[in-house]
Amino acid sequence: MIGGHSFSSDSSLNSHAQPMSEINTTPLVDVMLVLLVIFIITAPLLTHAVKIDLPQATSQPLPNKPEVISLSIDGTGKTYWNDMPLVQGELKQKLLQITEQKPQPELNIRADKETRYQILAEVMADAQNAGVTKLGFVSEPN
Image (cartoon, rainbow, N blue to C red; front, side, top):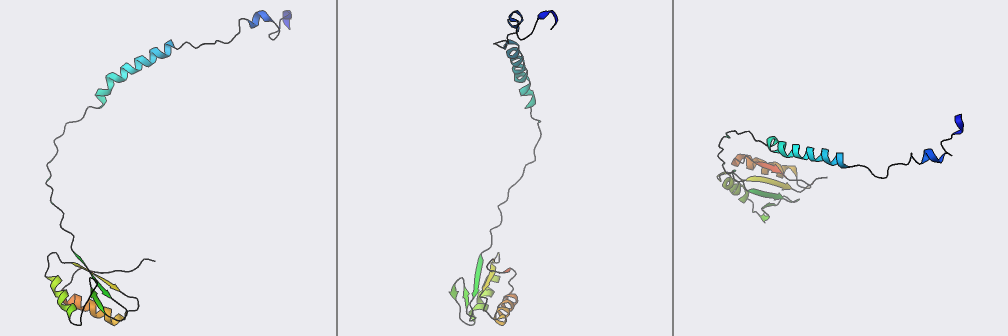
């Protein structure tokens, strides 16, 4: 200790080293007001839109979705047209009727897993011979 002075014990030095109790916020407020004015002036310039001449589009209605007909075949080979039972020769007549409709309905075949393949093949052959172009199979997801 040179001169006998110590930082921790000298009361005259500690009286000048007290921390400031307030922060002067005036420069901060001045800077923020200047930034606010700059943003107010430049904001309308940033939103300026480019003028372009857009082409005119004509909207056409979407074509109507074709009707969906459900053809069900149970395990014994009995056929159902939209859940209505069919007699023996009625299936071919119904298939010919739907081929004349515009747009042609979609035929969905729902076959029981016990249905013999021969019956299913005959139904598909009748649909192809009648001119059915939209044929789908309905099954259960696993």
